[in-house]
Image 1 (cartoon, rainbow, N blue to C red):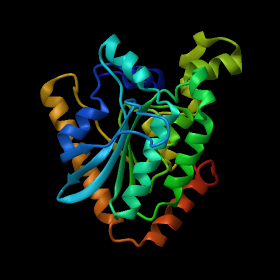
Image 2: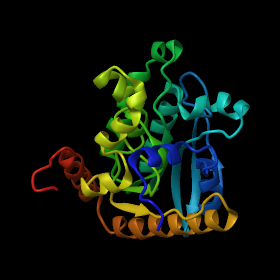
Image 3: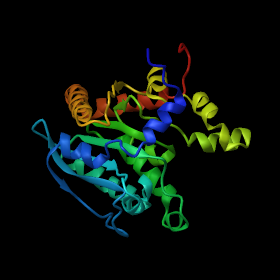
Image 4: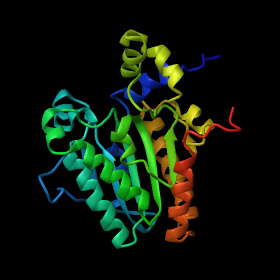
Length: 270
């Protein structure tokens, strides 16, 4: 029998560079995808992909964080850490989606927003806060899919959704386990213990009522395994979207509010 995966194992799996990227999910799940660029304020950030596509015959808006495979790609995408322009682009596309009544589907895969000096000077914190505010108030169905790392406000900016879907080896946390260990125990080397304490795995978050659906991963390093993953992710997104499409804008808002307010409420939970 295979040994049970620890939280540290899940962290390493979530960070594996061989995992499918946001671009691959878009290419395999959506049809006629047209990418839209720019925040209409400063510039374009390739670290966040966004655009319009067709999903089971329905026009949708798709936004996600992109990572690279090579060093050159990762430098281009800053290892999946968006600049404020990326989050402002996301806000622009969110508002556009609501204007035209398109459901919003996001793909989360970031260790956190880019912490560089220039990003802070251009309002990184405000851009993230604005994205959270706008997404929380949308009157269209919103689904967030965690495909790898989900770190800090950089992840939350695209995760204020009606439904949160997590791949089996994805994670969602307030900061990295290394950062947590450095703050709590003054030793980043204790990151494995921190990962266990943080309850950041899909299974942990499902028990806490944050994650709604877990998508199993089986041998995704191989082509057949990746094909199954894309098919299963497609199926789960559609299953959740069908339910959300039956709700009014106000019902979606109220349900999202209740879901968010329940985060951190451990009464009656194991």
